Length: 210
Image 1 (cartoon, rainbow, N blue to C red):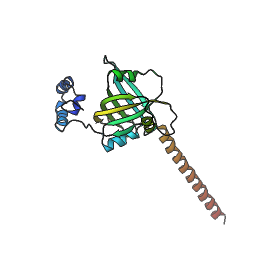
Image 2 (spheres, one colour):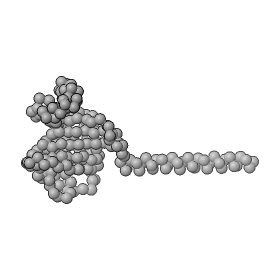
Image 3 (cartoon, rainbow, N blue to C red):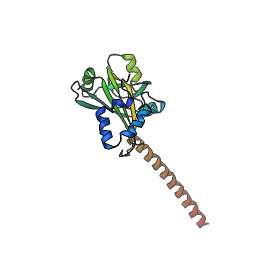
Image 4 (spheres, one colour):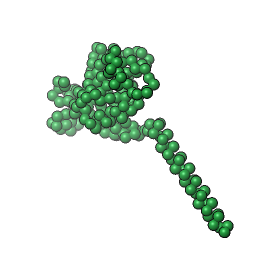
């Protein structure tokens, strides 16, 4: 459970609040705190957003506080919401450095950063994480169907607080597959229009020759 007075205190430390006060933003964030701070539970809308993503950044820190950010990706749905506070995903075999796993063994605090470039949305999630090895049932539940990757273990992330950022400065980008599908539909429409134009011209020429 979150031991802070407000859920947002996971990020807004006394030092952060002092800087906010000095730079003029403390009052607006204090109003957020008066309403209870950020949400702690995963709402249905957030769950839908999470399970649409194909990419996630997982941040951890070792015992000395040295941070590390790891990218993980997969087909939409590879991130699964297991309950109101838990997100799980199959951890595919990579370069086998195991920095994230080592960090979590010493320091379970973790952070997830989700960004949807097409809709210019980003979600920040604070919490703790742990690695689960040798759990075939859980792995089967989390492994994307027919996805060509070798799962090595499972990562479970427990959410303690989350916040949604404004879209400012997020570049709008699109998935290559979505662009290819849109261009394919455009090309089919062009082809149909060209065929219709050819038909109308043929009919016009035939009428003129009568």
